[in-house]
Structures are given as C-alpha cells and as structure tokens.
Amino acid sequence: MDVLADILDTTRFSGVLLAQLRSSRPDWGCGIDPLPTAGFHLVAEGVCWLRTAGRPPLRLVPGDVVLLPRGAHHELVGAPDAEAVRYADLEAAHPPGRGGVLDLGGDGPVVRIVCGKFTYEGEAGQHPVLAALPEIIHVPGLSADAELQGTIRLIAAETSGRRPGAQALATRLTDVLFVQVVRAWLELLDGEDGGSHGEEVGPSWLTALRDPRIGSALSLMHDEPQRSWTVEGLARAVTMSRPAFARQFKELVGSSPLAYLARLRIDRAARMLRDTDELVSDIAQAVGYTSEFAFSRAFSRQHGIAPGRYRRRAPVPLGA
Image (cartoon, rainbow, N blue to C red; front, side):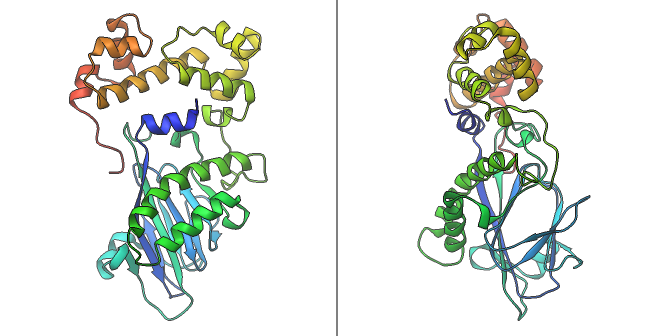
C-alpha cells in the first residue's frame, strides 16, 4: 500500500489554481492573508522574493516552487524591501483578466507567478500530510529531478497561453506537483536545509516512510487496517524484535503503533461515512471494530461528534 496516496485519497486532497500574478514593475508587492489550508506559488517567469515572519527574504527564480503547508501569511515582492499591498486591494485595483491573471503593469522585466491552494475534507490544521510538513518548503526548480522539472514547465506553459483545456490540465497537474514537491522535500531532508529554510522537522509518519522497516509496517496497516494487528505481529512482519520495533516506531512516527492504527481506522471510517450509505455497524466492522459501541466511542473521541451526526453534517472541503 502506498501510504501517502492512501491518505491523500482518504481526505479527498486536491489542488486548485487561484490566480496568476504578473508585474513589470520593480517595486511591486503582494501580501497574502493566512489560508485554512496549504498554498503554493510557482515562479513561471522572472525573479521575485518571498517574505515570511521571522525569516530572511527568500529569492525565487524561474522554476522555483514554494509550498506553505499551513497557509501562513506571506508576501511576494519584486525587491526585498518593497512595500506589500494586500492581495484583495490589488485585485480591486487591477481586476483579473483572462485566465485569472492579475496584471500590475509596468515596463520592466516580467515576473509571472502561478498561485494555488489545496482543498481536503477534515478539520482545519488536522490534515495528516500537511501537519507533518514544515511551515515553508522551497524546491529550487533547477535542482529538482527531471519529473518535477517537467511538471513545472508544463504548468508554466499551460497557464501562459489559451489552448483548449489549458486551465483544466494545469489544475489537474497541481495534484501531481504536490506529491512531487513532498517527494523532493523528503529527499532533501539530509541536505543542507531540507528545502525548508532550515526549519527543524519532528517525527512523523511521513518522514518515517524513509525507514525501510517502519515504512513497511505503515504500509501493512494501511493495506489492512481492519486486521487485528498487535505490536508483536507488526514487529514480526518487518523482522524486528518487539521492543526494538515499538521504540523505533515511536521515535520515527511520534506515536505508538496501536495509536497510529486507531487513528487510521477512524480516518478510513470517516471517508466511508461521507462516501457510502453503509450502516454504521458495518463500517465499524470494516475498519476493525467488533463492537459498534466501541467504534462510536472511538470516533466521537477523535472527531467530537458521533458517527451518525458526522454523516449528516458531511464536512465541506477545507479551502473550498
């Protein structure tokens, strides 16, 4: 089981193109308010700077991608000390044209930035992938692998013209872009700054995927969450002793194996409640609970609401 793919599918994680910023002025600046979900910027043309609280300005060049997993307030500017105007005010003064391009004008070198966000079902700030990432991930386009460079070039090209289906194609590519950026970040973790402004990263299931045996254990749980897994059984499956497995799992993932399994089961059940008409008792059994009462209690503990009420109040995707 591909753990990352399973979690993205369970939460209906998908990308949305918001707008393009275009400017030929050296003194332009755009302030972007906090989002309840992740946002991203792809520099299609020109050079600009990213400013965020507590960090020095970050220079961005064509092909660079910046992901802000928790939608932190930030500013995109034409120079490190340029004044930033709130995006809403810029939009009012320069109504976006075709393709959602907000053109700030000017007669200097062109800067074009493709902006987007990601939506998902669940509680704000609780997405399993986004919560495992640092506040900022910067992937320099020139150092990215060939597959990511290809996606970047294709999004930049599709958002620059008026070919049939361009917007739809570029939007669908944002899902690919997210996975490739996360991959690139994982591969850079042992590098100089991990692609994240030197920010320390704590233990999580996502970084634990780099460990062959703990990653295999996570895959087993995602493949069969309904199975009556025990710590000893998981340890045996990945050829480790029980004490060593329990200790290493906690160190790398940040929770015990059975606590991780319990959350996985409830997340899977939440998707089934949203997507199917199956009885609550059948869903409870499908995710590994022998008692509907025990399932309802565990579900309410995690979501603060009973399964039946959760189904009736099917959550609106975050960031929608």
